[in-house]
Length: 293
Image (cartoon, rainbow, N blue to C red; front, side):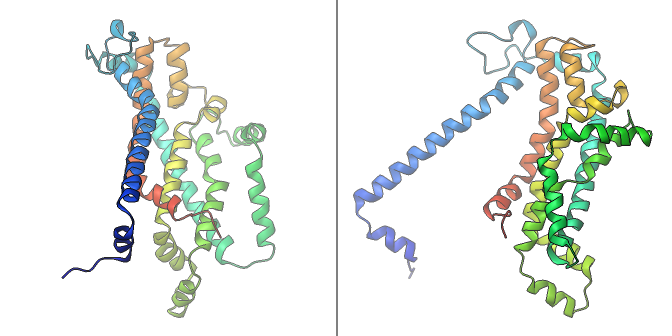
């Protein structure tokens, strides 16, 4: 004999007409969301389709939503116009090191501001948060002078080092750590655990959704960064993909539009794959309201 849950009993107690109205409302909401999703994803689909279409048949009216005639020549032309492979490797190195480095520094700083007590802690934290109000264009000159002093201009280090400190990530993780009960820390200390054990063996595993969200945000920001490479990089061998796309479109390459679309597709795909891999954790971090406390 099966028993019904309270929710099922309440649903059975509703009039049939009301249940039908609720069901119809859910169907309408699903249809609206599907239509909105299709509208939002249509530019990306059109971009990929045009990059796989032969140049003479591209940009037809009405637009083609299938790559007919199919061609991958556009992707091969990208490598002939710019050193795409080298630029891709540069972007991957910069984005990976910035993401990993900023997460390490952010985790350590967030633990200090969340769990440690020291004089001026709150004032220092407020001072760090004030950096969020300063535009990057305002600090680029002193950063450039600093990089030039250490002879790091026109190197990938000039793009990596400034990105190792992420104020938003510190704030985000600090708020997430505050939502974790401190009783867990006290129990670990009774067993003889130190700060690093508590941080990396307890708080970091419990903060998986928040860290996954930061991985997506930090990697995407570093991967799409155009302003930094524009200021610090001048040698083609050290350029990243955003600079390469601009040079392909209007600079040394001046490639056709479908070739530019093919390059953009190859730039978008890694970030899209990263999001698909971490999307569950990213959504969980939002659902659990990581920014609270």
